[in-house]
Length: 144
Image (cartoon, rainbow, N blue to C red; front, side):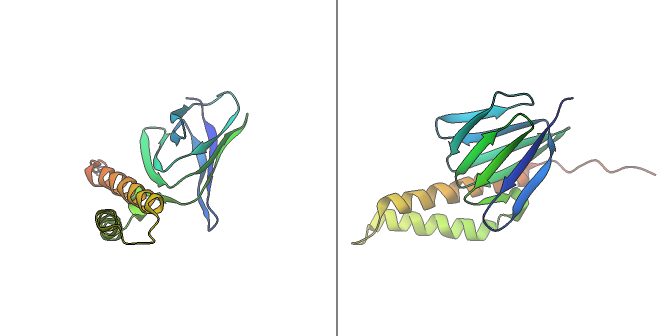
């Protein structure tokens, strides 16, 4: 099966760098499916779920926005923030969701509603990605 190089980079670290079979990313105008030999492009990413297929494995990540560039030899994602499903602290994400929902209900003077809505979207994406990790079936063990 054909592969392509995928690099995911944030300001803090390189989140991912490996050969993959497919990437599905949340583009600003909808989901983007990228396969090897895809036409070059550059687009803005919105907060959402990132799916990476590598051999028979599916890797889920939460991305909070950024840029995606498809080059002839690789795909580069420059993300504002990106977390693997196993890195997501569910309690923190639930707390962020509750805070954002409460602020949207009360709308205290001087609050930026767009910023609160963005925080709510980010927390919902993080919870969705973390849930996929919980539902993932355990890998089969090898028998002696």
